[in-house]
Amino acid sequence: MTLKWSSGTSQCRHLTVESPAKKERGSRETGSQSYSKPPTRAVLVEVIDGKSERILLIKNAEGISKGLWNGLGGKIEEGETPYQAAKRELFEETRLTIGALTYHGTLTIFLSGAVSPSILLYVFSSKEFAGRLKADGKNEPRWFPLNALPYTSMWHDDSFWLPYLLAGRKWVNGHIEYAADNLIRVAEILPLAEGEDFSEKVRKSVGIV
Image 1 (cartoon, rainbow, N blue to C red):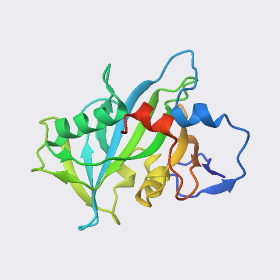
Image 2 (image 1 turned 180 degrees about the horizontal axis):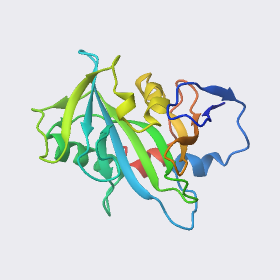
Image 3 (image 1 turned 180 degrees about the vertical axis):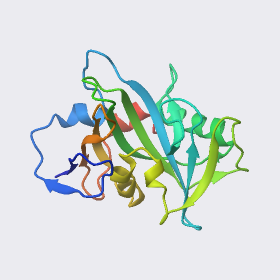
């Protein structure tokens, strides 16, 4: 099945379930589709404190996410796996040392009506962290209760896929399209079956050993 949202509003609140179209599962699973202009490869990490039922977000001071609350992350550097980049970015932004990471899938994001994807985002979560939270001097980290997330001050697509991540689910690929007015035009996820995990090929490509 495919979880899909399509509307002219800014918030992804309602999902419909469709029978899957014929998709090339292998290419979608690895995020290796061919485009005339390759997207920027980046990582996003959602750090969750299960005992206190809260999540760590960061308000960006610059870039395309300026002024918005986001998960931790950034661009993947040359020679890095997504897994390595996730750990590095988290430490640089918070000084927290992360333990095991759970890989949830990729989000292919088209910004401002773009024909080619702008970002290929590898999404992780972790409930294992240690150290004292410290800002990097540019961005503001803050813990939020899981039942009071600031969706109106986050990227609009977060309200579509983040609840799915918080439920512990994984997906083959997510597809997010923003129109020129920065409202979401299309948002869909092709989920893995409950209890299913990624293939060994995908796990190796992400850097999971």
